[in-house]
Amino acid sequence: MLNSRIIPTLLISEGDLYKTVNFKSPKYIGDPLNTVRILNEKEVDELIVIDITATRNNTSPDWELIEYISRECRMPLCYGGGLNSLERIEKLISLGVEKAAIGFAAFKYPEIIEEAVKSFGRQSIVGVLDIKKTGFKKRYQTMVLNGSLKTNMDAIEYARHLMNIGVGEILLQNIDLDGRMEGFDIELISNLYETIDIPLTVLGGAGSLNDIKNLIDKFKIIGVAAGSLFVFKGKHKAVLINYPDNDQKKILLSGKN
Image (cartoon, rainbow, N blue to C red; front, side, top):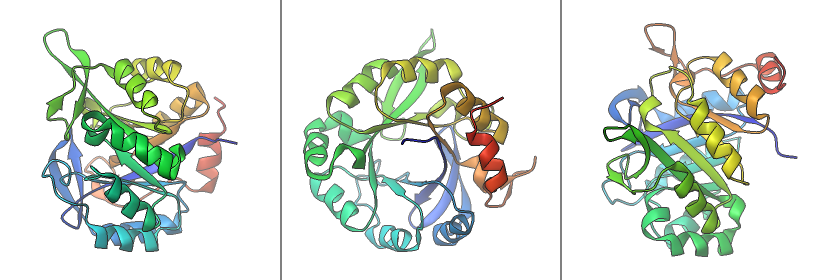
């Protein structure tokens, strides 16, 4: 049975851990391996790791770091960044990573995703949906390449594209809310949730555990991911890796007000 999941998200670049705001201004956080070890002890549901420079710079994933993370990780692991060929996806899966999160390649080379789904199963392929409000009327626009390139498709159109090429899950990243900790865009999530028939994970907006609870209460079965909430603590945003304990998780996942 599919359950809601509460998922820390780590952003890496050149071997280090960072946190961004609106996909910009990366702030150095520390060592990703130490962070994974801490999250192991906290028994997190799942972990998302995204290389924020590999795709944009057209470089290969840091295979050595991915292998180290995979070996350390005691929870299901999803990785994204630089996965622009079937060979790279195959290598990622061979290193023990359960899910490959695909952004630019799903837009530019959809045939790669179709082949990956045939080879590894749709449960292993996550389609990344990066959304930003653009233009005079501030309409939702789907972006790729770390928010630098427009696709000319809105969230619903792109979600249908991802389902048509066979992905088993969608990771919605709200660029406007990234790192701001101001709450989720419920209207956007609702519209998307009602459109798709595959699991949805939402990233961008979590400012408190109450934000997570409200989302799970409303949608019942959903993945709720967060970056800043699980790496910062307090109003001054001191770096402190954290995650709800078992009692807090039971309340968050109960789906009850």
